[in-house]
Image 1: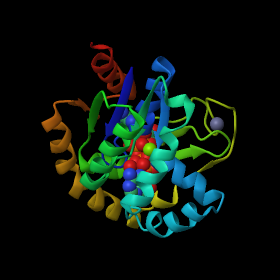
Image 2: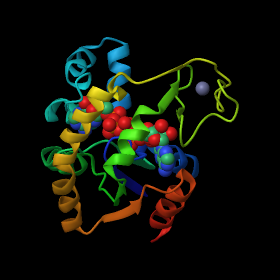
Image 3: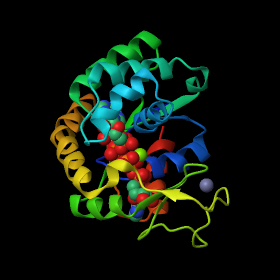
Image 4: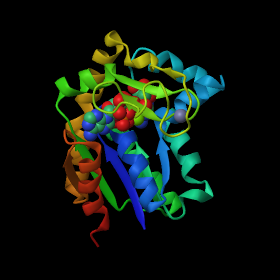
Length: 217
Ligand code: AP5
Ligand code: MG
Ligand code: ZN
């Protein structure tokens, strides 16, 4: 059983790595960012609340986010394991998650931090683009579609840039997330379940390193 947290600053490659992990290990992929974007698109109460924070690159309040995660973890597809991508992001969320995993009897087994230098992240985020039809993520610099203008996964031709990937917002997102990065790592380091991978390698190599950690014991 793998109950995994992926830590990493915006653009570190959490979503990209999750896709490969899901392909091999069939875990439920729980991205709070993706869930908020879906809620915003559907204009649900949570979506409307989250929008005011996300559009500025700020964090959605801890309680709102934790509640969303708890509901998600109750879904039956998490019974064979899950990946938390983008949660927790503050030590308060990490504490809330302790309670949630106890209540649901789903103990964390691994925490993997993907390390990427800030300068690289700024470049990556401004070059990210996403398929409108299936949500596949690409990058103008490091990971373009095989055929220009055509999604590798679904053949779609329409792409978009995330609102919060605009340069003004990216700066604030990085600042906000950087503050909590070290305390969060320390939290899981102390529990003895933290591993680190170098996220400045190709996505294939990043996954290879993650796979080594996941396939141990
Ligand atoms: P969220 O959607 O989680 O955004 P994020 O953490 O800022 O992370 P990203 O999704 O931008 O990056 P990623 O690490 O997934 O990288 P990706 O694989 O796409 O959250 C959005 C917002 O929601 C937050 O700002 C906040 O407001 C709110 N929110 C979410 N969770 C919250 C929480 N817990 N508490 C409070 N608020 C919360 O890769 C990035 C790019 O790089 C892509 O173009 C990709 O193709 C490319 N790439 C990936 N890997 C590599 C590689 N190895 N080499 C080269 N390029 C690569
Ligand atoms: Mg992501
Ligand atoms: Zn597509």
